[in-house]
Image (tube, rainbow, N blue to C red; front, side, top):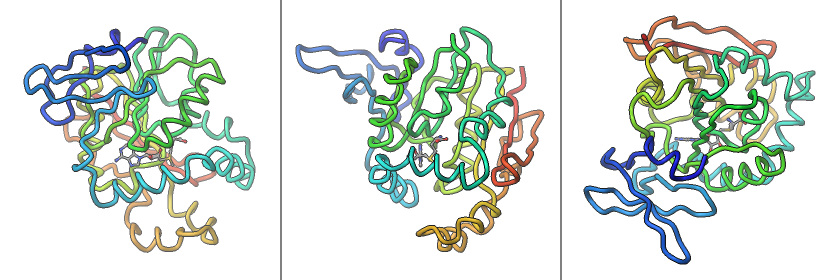
Length: 262
Ligand SMILES: C[S@@+](CC[C@H](N)C(=O)[O-])C[C@H]1O[C@@H](n2cnc3c(N)ncnc32)[C@H](O)[C@@H]1O
């Protein structure tokens, strides 16, 4: 999709107000129609993030992923081999839970380097959001190489810069255990899903962390977030239906899903 096509569903992360495109010879911006606040579009990525609002764990992991981005794809490929599988096959275990049809608009929150988008069926209108510029840069490069089209947005999962009911399916993989406010992120995914749409949320269980206890930071992560390594079913918005969770990838990940009532 071009910026003009995706514009109707974009909103200011500060006011949730409508945005308009402003083009000059050498730059493109998105401007809040009401307040005039400007958000840059750099290398095709709309930067709908209020930097000062990125604090605590979100800031810590934003920095971490900015630095880790060049190594991320190789590290995940290796981790998948250690888990006795091919990365694409492991990802397909949870991607099968998404309900999508040609023409659907699909959001991946925390898109990272785009590996899930590559495995989705063709003919979807894909939007990927992440808090890390480094990961999005990598993602853009990967998507070009793979011939996959998607709109990329720099943004925070806890303040999604989209209009309500914008997406036919919403996916999140791998970030939520360490978000500042998991409940708020789930509420945002629910808000931007259209009535009837399914939301699929995947992250690691304690088993995976135990297996990678030798990995730098793993032990500290388990200590800091001990209670977070299971599906946060109790944090799903009360209005959601068909709330459930199952283990995937030999129990290394949980796959939780819920639906916005139609
Ligand atoms: C483990 S990676 C997963 C990437 C991708 N979904 C995958 O399956 O490979 C976690 C991602 O979450 C992103 N992230 C962390 N905190 C975030 C937040 N508050 N909002 C949006 N993305 C966030 C990181 O930048 C990183 O790209």
